[in-house]
Image 1 (tube, helix red, strand yellow):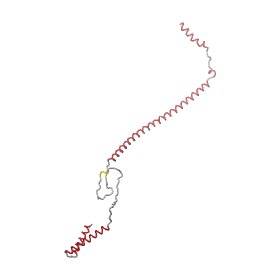
Image 2 (tube, one colour):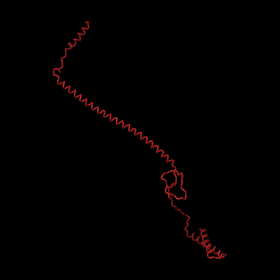
Image 3 (cartoon, rainbow, N blue to C red):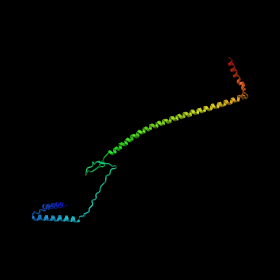
Image 4 (cartoon, helix red, strand yellow):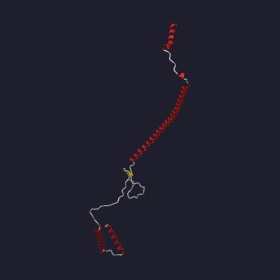
Length: 200
């Protein structure tokens, strides 16, 4: 600051000597030098006296924190100092390898899930086919069981009717049991056969 004041005062003195055409001698030069020292010294003293001073000072400055949405190690900072930035410019680059590993793992899990979906769909189709086959068999058996039951009922009713008709058409005498022969008469033909065979 003092140098600037001295240079300014020297420029003013040069202009005064040239414009006003003041003679340069020992008195004018001495007067200009003493005047400069007094003027510049007075300004510096006044400025130092009126300027606030403290031994305990604090410096305040405003900063804008830049925080990424993801965590990671910064591997590159393409921003240069004192260069204006535009919207969309990259401020720094984070190491992508950990996130790439996660992406690869999720991709593999997705492919495995797709394969599982295909297998489950095939199993579902197979189970559906088994269910349809079982339904068809159940319908077939139900139909044939009903038919057999109907035929059995019709046969049973026919047998009952025929039995009733026979019972009605048969006379009472024919239904009475025949008298049994005595045991001696029943055994006589057998005895005669045995006797005849011995004679021969």
